[in-house]
Image: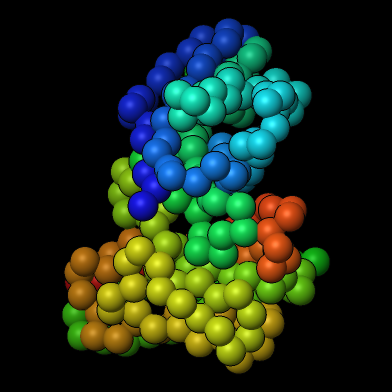
Length: 115
Length: 117
């Protein structure tokens, strides 16, 4: 079975600085997708960024980018120019290609933005 | 489009009571999911459905039942509520093909906070 591990329960960063959130995963599949979701205090789950395992190029979405290391099974999220609105729980998630059986989530990292 | 809607937003149950959490999506998605989120944890899959009339168990199905009679609705039934079922419940939906050639984003509802006392 696949597992997703987020080893940083909490991270803190100054506004306008850059922060990196770590995620490692374990799977026997070769073709899969990885995601970062943001969960603000409202509880709503918001997709931040998606990476397809067969793509070597790292995904980027505005201030958010990932460092995807397939061999190391590592998938970190970098947030540049941190803003107060970035404060939230961040979850790393995995699903195999064609998998209908839902996402596998890590335990999350609580990101604090210091003004 | 309302997206994925869930009712109720909050509920308190007594041990042994039963209830149904409602989930509806208006995006014509074929896949639907129920997750639970315990304090300080990520989401865990309870049940999922790949289409009307088809459901299957996820990682933590014990104490729950589901049905999928229409594309839009995917209710979650709790029988004989227990304190261990105190959690936040999320419904989600997505559109995907059998070939899985293109994974589409899972859209989440706002969640239901359930407390069992």
